[in-house]
Length: 385
Image 1 (cartoon, one colour):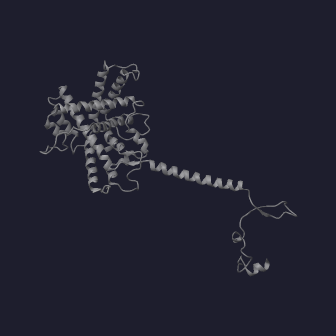
Image 2 (cartoon, helix red, strand yellow):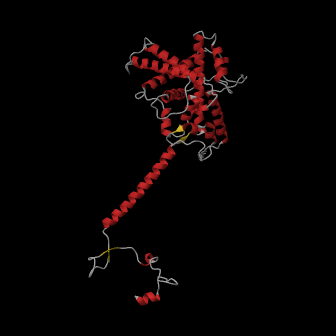
C-alpha cells in the first residue's frame, strides 16, 4: 500500500508541512454505514454494513414529504396570488382596455370569486327578498314595453330617447323594442343583478367593502324597496311580517305595485348621479367593474365579450326612463311624457353629462373601437364543391 501511494499520490503535499489530507478525504473515501462490536481491543475496528431497506425508505419518504410540502406551499402562494385582483398599475402585461376601465384599482385586494358573488343573480331560496326585486324589474320592463307599443310616447320621443347627442339628427332611429324574448330576459337579468349588487354591498356583514357610496335619495328608495319587498313576501307566506310594522298595501297586488314604484325610483336615482369626484362613487359604475369579472378564468372580460352587456344596460335604462316619464304624466307632475323625458335625458342620458350612463356609453364606444381594430380568430373549412 505504501509503494502504491508513493507511485500514485492521490493527496498532493504542501510545499511545506504535512499533506492536505482533510480537504481530499471526500474524494478518496466514500461515505458508508459502519459499526463495530467492541469499543476497544480485539473487534473494535469499524467495518462497513449495508443499512436495512426500511431505513432507506424512511429517509426517502421524509425527503419526498418535505419536497411535496414545499411544492404545495409554493403552489398555494401562487394560486392565492393569481386569484387576487391586482391594481392596473401592477407590473403586468399592458392592457389599454383595463387602463380605461380602472377595474383593478376599484376591486384590488379581493378575489375574483368574492367579487363575482356580489353581482350574481339572486337565489330564490337563499335570497327571497332579492328574488322579489328581480320580479319587480321584470314587471317594470314589461310595462315599459307595453307603453311604447301603445304609443304613450310618440315617434319623436322614441327618437329622442334613442339618441345620445344633444340635438337630434334627421337619420336618428326610434327606440327599437322588437327584441327576442331571450334577449329581453338577458337584458333584464343585467338590471336585476345591478339592484342585487346595490343591496348586497350595503349590508354591514358584507366581507367585500367597496368604495362606492349611495346618495341619500338612493338609500331612501332602497329602504322603501326592502320594506315593500318584505310586505310582498309576507303576503305570499314566505316570511312572517316583523312587528311592529306599518302595512302600506292592503293586498298582494298593491304591495307589488308599491314595490315596483320604489324599484323604478331607485333605478332612476342610480342613473341620476352627478359624478364630480371619484368615478367609482357611483354604484352603477361599481357594478360595471363587477360585471367585468370572469370568476372561472380568474381574469377580467375583454372588450369583445363585454360590450353586449353594456348594450343591454343601455336598453334597460332607456326603457326605465320612458316608463318614469309616463308615470309622471299620469300623476300630473308634467303635462306630457315628453316634458319629463327631455328633462331627464338632458340631465343624465346624453354625452357630455357627468353621469353613469355617459360612462356606460363611453366604455361601449371604446370597446367597439377595440373590436374593430383587433384581429379576431378566424375559421377555415373545406367545401365539398
